[in-house]
Length: 303
Image (cartoon, rainbow, N blue to C red):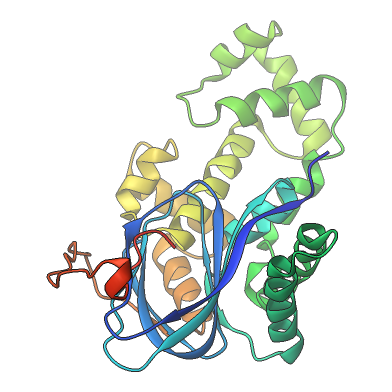
């Protein structure tokens, strides 16, 4: 069994004037913890201000870039890691990606983890992984006030996790196909039962009609897209299986208790970070010549 969190690399990085990291993405998580200075980083299509005690999480596949430092210096502990535990991964993907952590214990964990990694001592990698795992849990704990699942998520999970037999088979089928254009006739045909019998069994066991359950699954996916992407609401509705924005908005409001617009505004306001939204990102080319390593590196291509 792999360790829940697999450390790939960690190091202290001092970004001097004109240093930066070109825009790129990768298949692992990455955490930047700022211990001193100030810098600006692109994350997706947002500009993020990094200052002392800022902790930023980069998701797998997410474009990011550290803009060249204009003055002073930015010091970070930069950690690359894989997550093999699905619960931890889900929590990280739901959490706000940049917060301020002033807890001295978190700072000590980060610095001790980095020192352990480079020590070369017996079991140094294993020790560093254990220390970093604690850092991840503290990061999530600091996010706990906004990362707890909303009530409709809990209700859906609580009602369906105890299902057994045919009703569990129905729930699993719907979970695998809810983004498709489903009909009761199609579901009944694939499961080889009459639609009236399926509806009766599922309603009695779960409290949901089959169509209600499909809509709850679709809104659960839509909720994450509304909160954690900048996709247009019409695109989210269509992506989640709704035929019109009006039907999507009505269903979303009925299940979540807020409209998609209200939910997005609420999520943005609740982050309580120094995120500055700058609209559409235009690729920034570095115009200055990058000296080679012998003359002093001015720009790091892959941190």
